[in-house]
Length: 282
Image (cartoon, rainbow, N blue to C red; front, top):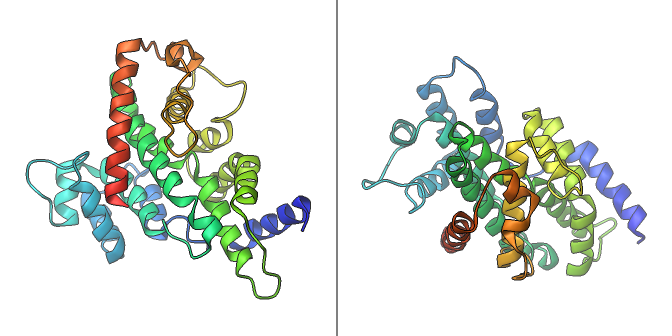
C-alpha cells in the first residue's frame, strides 16, 4: 500500500470518524466548552463530570497525585472543584480522558502510546510551571491545556491506524517505522484540523499546527512555552530520542521568555520528576 493511498484512508477516517474515535472523552470535551462560559457554576462542572464514572476515578487519581494534590485527599468531584477550582479541574478532566484511551491492541500502535502519554503529561505540567515562572500566571491553565493538546494529532492518527490495521475488509500491515513516518508527516495538520472541528479555542489549534514550524510568532506566549517544552523533552529523551547537546539557553524560545540557565535547569528537574509521575499514573 503506497503512502499516498494510506493518507487517503486517513483522510476518509477524519471526515467520517473524527467525532467518534476515542481520542477525547465526550464529557471532557463538553466540559471544556462549558468552562468557556462566563456563567458556568461549580455545580454544573461537578454534575457534568459525574456523568462518566470512569472519568471520575481517573480525575480523582490525578487530583490526589503528588503534582496536584494537597495534604488531605479529595474523595469527591465536588471537593476537587472546591479545592482546585473550576479551571484546574477542567484541565485535569481533559488529562484524565487521555489516560482512558492510553491503550491499544495493535503492537505497532501500542508501542507508541507510553512515550506520547509521558510527553503529554510532562508538557502539560511544565506548561503551567513555565507560565507561572515567567510572569504569565494568568495563562497557567491555558499553558497546561496547550501542552496537553499540542500533540493530539498523534493520538488521533494512532487511533485511526489501529482501526485500519484491524479492518477485516482491507487490513493494514503496520510496522513501528511506518507509524513513526505517518506521525511525523501528519500530526501537526491533523491536530490543527481536529481543534477546528471540535470548536476549541483557536490558540490551541495554532499551537498544534505550529509547534514544530521553522518560523513562529515569538509574541505568542502559549506557543513559545509549548515549543520550549518540546525542545526540553528532546534534550532529555522524554518520549523520543535524547539529544543532550541541545543548549536550551541558546534557543529562540528560551530567549523570548527571558529564561536564564538556572531557571532552565530547574525546568529540567521538574520535567524529569514529571516523567516519574506520568509512569506511576499510567
